Length: 324
Ligand SMILES: NC(=O)C[C@H](N)C(=O)O
Image 1: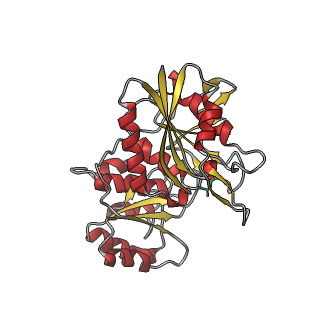
Image 2: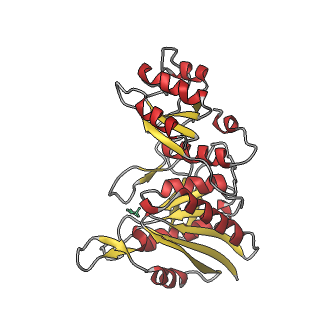
Image 3: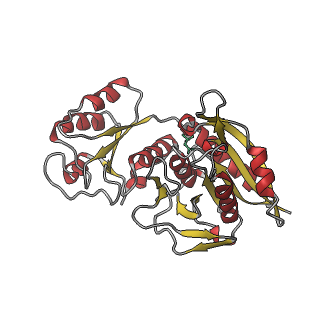
């Protein structure tokens, strides 16, 4: 019988209300999830792997790397048709995007979670896990990169983001909508993701990359701090609009570039690409002339992971991963 790997990492899907405080805390409900959901499938078995029991703010890029290695090692066996990762929703898009870049297998890798915990009425963990397994077991899910499945929607890890702090339909591909849906037992795709696929597979993460959110009137102090720390190899700027910063940040950006630090520009706007449209000081064209790299329509948190992976991989021309 074919197998599906279920990697448990924690998050609200693995939480209940604490008896004393009534607040959401981690509990070990993975056997409940597996026994309830497993009964529904007769063509394959679920193979649980308890990776961690962390709320997702505690997940690190090193965890993501280890989850990727784990998935590749299981899925290299012909017995496995796909993998599902259960994860807290706060940082789910980061792990999903990391896996999209890192994992070698073409078999489906699906990340899911829940917005309500096991103690709450309307716990969405069972239905989300069920849908995620259906997607992971579908032949149509092959070679689509890492997928995110919650609320019966299938999204690409490259495109999706958490948009709402509470709503069940929080995961959205804001610009282009979902790739498809899960409708009862049917897994239906409406479109392919047109995004270029990148693969980055360093054996360990050696680079530190920080994000600087850009605001009006900002100077270069934060960038200078990171440069002076001598620990940072990359800085992602979350700039204005098309990818612009105040002129008062430019000297620090130049200094960072002179010291060999890679600087990448993204936008504070939730939709659209950054581009070298503006020629004024601190505008995208000016930044490009200085050597700043452009992250397309990636959010700052995803661009950071991509830059970390590119800087950590030996003999890699980082610029190649930021050409749009
Ligand atoms: N819904 C959730 O999973 C949120 C939780 N704070 C987490 O990310 O672990």
